[in-house]
Amino acid sequence: MEPKKLAIIATKGSLDWAYPPFILASTAAALGYEVQIFCTFYGLQLLKKDLALEVTPLGNPGMPMPLGMDKWFPVLGLALPGMQAMMTAMMKKKMKDKGVASLEMLRELCQEAEVKLVACQMTVDLFDMDKSNFIDGVEYAGAAAFFEFAGESDICLYI
Amino acid sequence: MADFDQELDASGLNCPLPILRAKKTLNAMASGQVLHIVATDPGSVKDFDAFAKQTGNELMESKEEGGKFHFLIRKS
Image 1 (cartoon, chains in turn orange, purple):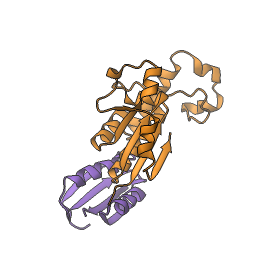
Image 2 (cartoon, one colour):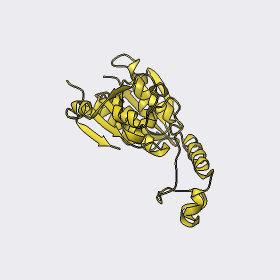
Image 3 (cartoon, chains in turn purple, brown):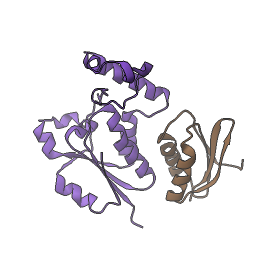
Image 4 (cartoon, chains in turn purple, brown):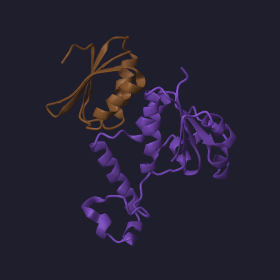
């Protein structure tokens, strides 16, 4: 029987938004799906060797913060230097404490399970990104190549 | 709990790690062998049920005991 196929477009490059593509891709692969993640625009950050992704509470009123800060702390205060680094450190610690896998680990599990990682060539050129900063095994392609796989997919997600 | 051939302790791990670890362990096992998984993630109860249904491996037992979740999966 032909395996089911999952096609994902990953467009976001923050720590929190990097999780859904890798969690869904690795799980689908474990269930026997053939999976492809097409990374475009900020989603290209997911392919960097050094996954220095951060999380920001700015423009995200839904993000829970310690001491109920999301309710009373002034939004402008969140723009202070060091705030993003602090929030990122706190989020990473919380994830570790709760047994949530690191992004590095999830990405490695994806690669082990032969999830195909595709970088959008156009965005790589647009941002003058250095391919040597990307992990091995990444393919470079465009929209038409995405549709070749996505057109045959059972599930297609835009994240 | 029935006999099993191999055990996987996924305690403290959160979604999707228990499933991914179980899949990896099953890959190295022979058809018909039974894997015993221990997990603390409450979401794993529904997840292992769904995993078994979609992969064809049989979920022989699923129970909570001593605050932990136990699963027996027979490799197809």
